Length: 109
Length: 115
Image (tube, rainbow over all chains, first blue to last red; front, side, top):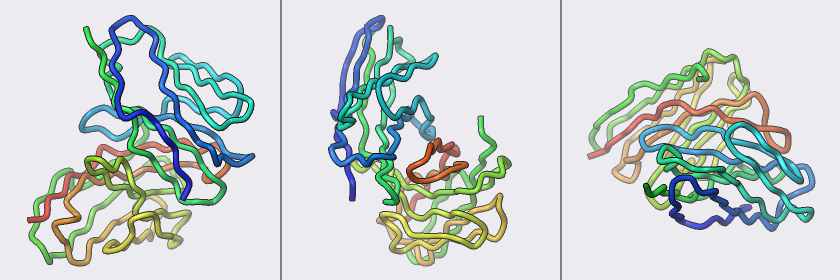
């Protein structure tokens, strides 16, 4: 079963940029990389998705190097409301969908 | 927010009793999923459906069965609940699957406690 690897937890201060990296060494040619955010007592919510290079939306940016074996979610100028668990999801061909344990991000005032 | 509801939202039951959780969508999405979430394990896929009456197993399917008789409803059944099935259950839907773009929309979750 394909796996992704993320840091278990991260802390950051308000107003800083936060970068969360996910490793996915076995990514396949046609796979997309997707990040989700989950607040306590809620279901996960889609943040951003990309295939290569850089993708940016109103919430975050996603950086994917040429070899695509990792990806970095970048959250600009975080606030307390960004405290959540962030999941990296990669679809490996036709394997079953798997969310990892995610990264628990805590924003400090 | 995507139109996904789950019922019940909370349930306490006893070991050995059957339990059915319901997921209802109003988005007409083809794919539906059931996940469970436990501390230290993240989200794990139980079963999924790729159409009416078309279902398949996920990572942790033992002890669970599903049915989908209509596009909008996906039922998860615990035939004989055990304490190890105490968890938070999330339903999700998506328009596409696999290597193509796959954005999943999640329901609010059902907290199940098996005593």
